Length: 258
Image (cartoon, rainbow, N blue to C red; front, side):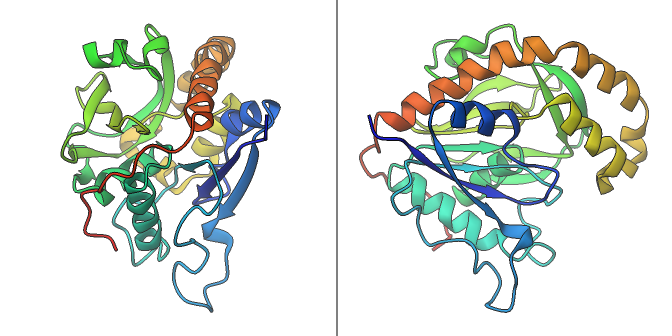
């Protein structure tokens, strides 16, 4: 059985592939990592982002401080949205995590913006919808918890997207864009140590709405480490099997990104 290759897009040092990358590599997956934020810009904004995934078997886009449309401050985002739209349209298995999920929403015709109910921080229950309970990727996560750290959410989903899980405030927490493309607002990749780096170093950690309860959230995440791995390693395996089954028939993505 040939090894799979996942093309991953990262937006900051504090948001690496984490547990997901570790679990996939333990299964023999090769990660072709693009650290877009660390690339020189003298070749033009977004030069580090390819036009397509090449021979990679899946595209995974991770999180970061950026908003999905913060193109001036993060000039590689337009190219990333375009890559997402083209890849999903071509049937490439896709997983978007937090910002990656929001970029997919925007790229496919939805709307992303600040959550009017405030930011989400820390350990959060994952509440599956009926569609989520029967989903081949998310269905095994019934009763799980996950780490969240986000101020933005999907305000309007793209056409034909299906909500698989909702956050406690009712906003979409996991979405199936197509049978081969998923977005999760939470962070299945985040280790307790990675979460600690966020509340100590991230610019968004200065948000007064977030500051209260950091240590309590950290303690809860450290205590839940085994449960987090128990639920999200099988999720990683199920996405791997989706990628192993091959690209899906090409489908036109509803996007203005070309």
